[in-house]
Length: 153
Image (tube, rainbow, N blue to C red):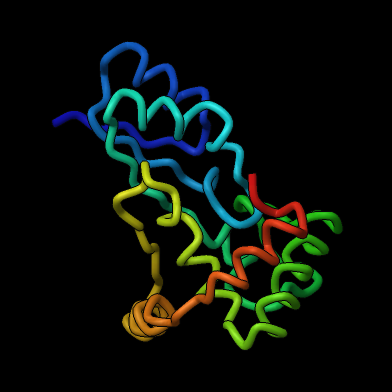
């Protein structure tokens, strides 16, 4: 099995179209904030039977908790617009009594092409927190509300 990983949809599309990837790691492009992989990449993976691993699903931590000034997105300072979008999602999650991190970790695997979630952690406690967050039941109503907010492709 041959795999390719990238934070660029174009790079992964090229690898798949060249027949050079049986599995792809899509980093940061299939998250609650950046759903650009849904345009071409995920449909192609479904069509060709390419396995998908979703990584970078917290967008450099912006989706781990309520965004604050100085928060990061894609390994750089988040823009005001990115922080506002993340805050909007956070507030919806809070009203639904769901931790933002739980929604962010659950989102990627809702797509049928995504079979694996890759968690990047800096400590054992962070791993344990993420594993606990993954156990949160996210009601269908939350996802419906996310879609109504225009936050779903």
